[in-house]
Image (cartoon, rainbow, N blue to C red; front, side, top):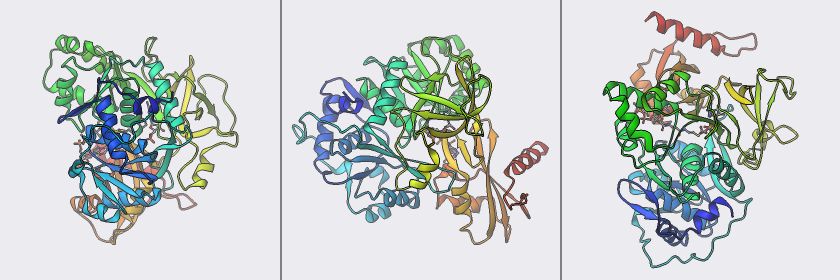
Length: 493
Ligand code: MLC
Ligand code: AMP
């Protein structure tokens, strides 16, 4: 049975999802989702703008039960960003909650439903017959930043989701006894696929605690109620800082955390320094894995076997990986770096409405080109960086330099803009804007201006004004030089 089919047909009285307000069993979740789905029928792609939690879970499953694709929107985005996705997916319906009510978006949407206003407690759902899926149908459309500026829609079929969920379930030994704490946003792969859908496929319990502060996460983890936790490196780094600040007793902490069977890090490179500190403080050797919106998960350290610091491990079940050199040839030797390319049922078919980007992203023989550079040692992969300087990973979010540059150029006083990602202990990479301006601008004014146009996590953390950019003979901005310049001016300060 397909993983999602398993969730949609689970009638058990075991608790499936919990948040600070409510909890639902699998049976209750499916009944409510069935009731809501009867209001959705006939739409194709449905926008879901609901706070991570129980209501989000109902909305998500209802959309699938109505045989539509879920298009999750981030509560942190601006109307402009939502509108882009609404237009690109030609979504005919928006499901939102009161907390995220946005008049402009509701007015813009052809049809909208406020999930909080609906009575979903009918005796049984109108659709509560056995729910069947078509493996090749799209279940989910996620948006990811690209090198070309505008975010790209990534349609994921039931088959794609099933491949990653089953691969992770086997590799990480998921079971119905698992209880996972979910602190991640619910519009990206890590939160949706690795946490939410893996937990529910395995009849486990997923507890949502969105945007929890490090102290709250630590309290929860120490409660001994959870068996699995997954986060991005920034979150582990902040937990370490909290432990050090509060002077936790290390033995006590280790004891409190020994109910956890698995702690995973992913979405960005985990610095070995963070891995080692976390191991010393918590007793857990973080399991690092590698994935991407377009492919779900591809590589993982062993759950039971040896985990290697700095490595993202070996291919997950059903995933084929190869490294390709600059001449497009497969590398068969160890310790030689090349681009990671991926094949498998987990890999999506192509970007939404974007055949050109799709064609560029696959080789003629069907391998997906990740743009990430790695080498292999003792059959394990080590990520070295990305092919494009214009793709930045900050706190686990992928951010396109070009998207921010294009936006900054709309400012009447900015004549040129170059965005770079500079190494940062907290964010992994921090966004910095270099600007050529017609008149000097205050950082605070620029930040406020940006916040009207883009999610705050995309807003540059620093602005540097300059009279001209270093460019090569072709007129291309030399971003490596800007990075070196930023490092230099900050080491002097
Ligand atoms: C928040 N801010 C960020 C940011 N997150 N800035 C840069 N990068 C980020 N990631 C902004 C805030 O809006 C705020 O702006 C300021 O920085 C300080 O915020 P904060 O309170 O310190 O941040 P917080 O809200 O606690 O969020 C930090 C975080 C969050 C790490 C919890 O960024 C997060 O949840 N990241 C996970 C992203 C994720 O799930 N990625 C998976 C992608 S899937 P201001 O101006 O208001 O002060 C994928 C595939 C795979 O990658 O392999 O998994
Ligand atoms: P996204 O497009 O948001 O899904 O991000 C996918 C990208 O995150 C990958 O292409 C990598 O660059 C990066 N990534 C994910 N996991 C890791 C990891 N463990 N180490 C380094 N980079 C990672």
